[in-house]
Structure formats: C-alpha cells, structure tokens
Length: 188
Image (tube, rainbow, N blue to C red; front, side, top):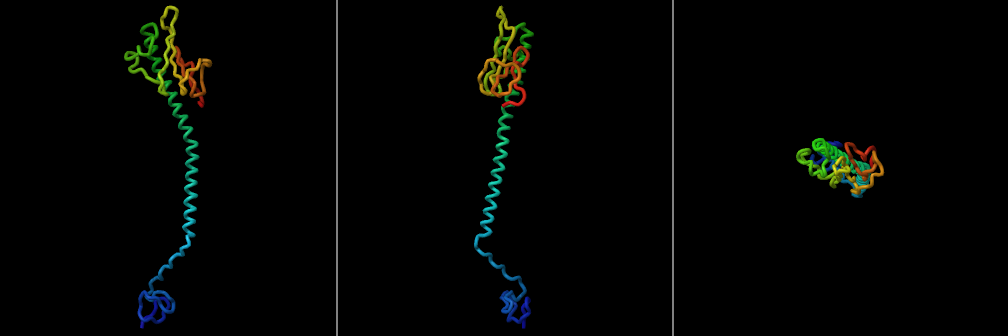
C-alpha cells in the first residue's frame, strides 16, 4: 500500500494525481499554480503608471528645453560677436601695419592681402561683409579709418552712442585703433 506524501492517507498509486483526501499531488510535488483571474485589474494599473511616468518625463524635458534653448541661442549670438571682434582686431592690425609702411591707410581692405594679412576675413559672424571707410584729409590722403559690422540685424544705425552696447542688433565699430561701439555686459 502507498501513502500520500502530504497527508499520509492511503492511495492506489503515488503520482501527480491528486490525493482524494487533501487534493494535492500524492507524490509530494508542489501543487499546480492557480491561474490568475482575468479581470484586467493589474493591467489597468500598469497602464496608468506607464502613462503617468511618460507624462512626467515629457514635462521634465519640456522644462529643460525651455531653459536650455534660449541660453543656447544667446551663446550662439555672443560667439558671433566675439568672432566679429577678433576678426576686426586682426584687420585693424593689418591696417595699422599698412599705415606704418605707407604713411596712409589703405583705400580698401583688398590692399592688405597677402602682405599684411594672409586672408582678409570675408564676413562678420553673421555672414555679412565688413564695412570699411577711409577717412581722407584735405589733400585726399587716407588718415583715418572706420571698420564696422552691422550686428545681428544687418542694419547700420547712425552712431548716436559711443561705447558699450547691450543689444545683439547694435553695430560693432572699430575706428583708428580702438572700438568705439562694442558689446559689453549682458546682451539681449
């Protein structure tokens, strides 16, 4: 005679067959798993959690983008200003070297290359040509110069202000060895 491994009651044969008394497999194997109820309660909860997490991630990315994009655009404009000012300094050094050698400044920027500057910068940081003006004396000799960039907006404004500017649209002007209009401080 054989006995159930769970409850010890007599059975015909020890196997996976359920014991007539306890209902568990007579050979002592773990009872079969009970299938979960199919009501969708857990599935709905998982879907709600996933949707909430996705919405939080999208909101976080939106906040980060709202902060980062304006800062990126400002940094790009500031870089264009700095590049323009560096090119203007290089051009001014070449103009001054030309003036030392010839006792007058050049009539155009084309006279500088290749002796005084290897390559004349073609454009400012915004892609527009530098404006160069030779200032003549009564005899027609070029005794001064103005080198200018129209800034972000590309429009040259009359020089009403001298010194620092606070707007990316303001002109950048270099005249006779110094910047007369230049960006300074926080730009907008």
